[in-house]
Image (cartoon, rainbow, N blue to C red; front, top):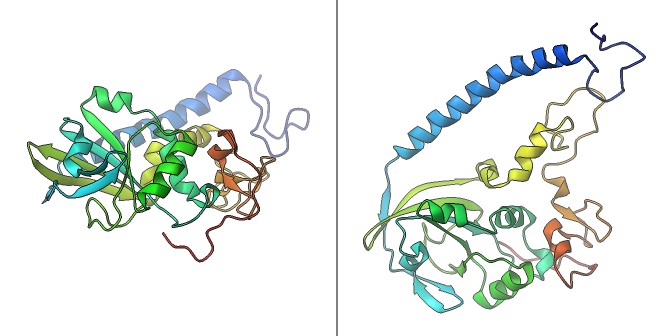
Length: 260
């Protein structure tokens, strides 16, 4: 017997309708058709991405890392392909004042062994001064290579907040792909999992059924205070920072008047 969604004995306000397993499976199978079409379209887009042209640039340009200046070519680590994330930076800001959005991307890519297994190297680039960057990397516990590209022209430097792909052919280097904004979500597995849940990301732009928890501004949960309350207020840090040793409650973001 199918339980009617509006049955007052089983309906839960603000929750999905309660039904029997067969009814649930039928609804699940109906959505699966759309999910498979979405997957196939994603595959077709990826195929088109592999057919994009590329732009050659000077791979001998120097970037600054823990071993002082090195040519950009070194970031390939002898491999033919390289993916970088360009992390925004607030000059002079304390750790808690750095970009919460960039933190999510860097945090989700703390280990790149599966990329390495496919001949792809990974690095984080940022426009910050190396002494500030080095301190931040140590505090966050990042294990992937970081480099300062301060003063370096695009495509190595330029605008931050991008995922960018490069190809090497001997000593020649090429830009093959770059994305930003929601294009960066590919790295953030947490968002993909939230998209599977009945409450979603909890963001105001989402199309959610009536009665579900009210959505808030985009990325509202990426900063929190010491008690775990989501806030962009002066006592907040990017969420992963609270897992770091020595992370204490703060009184200011310390980034007023600073720019990316």
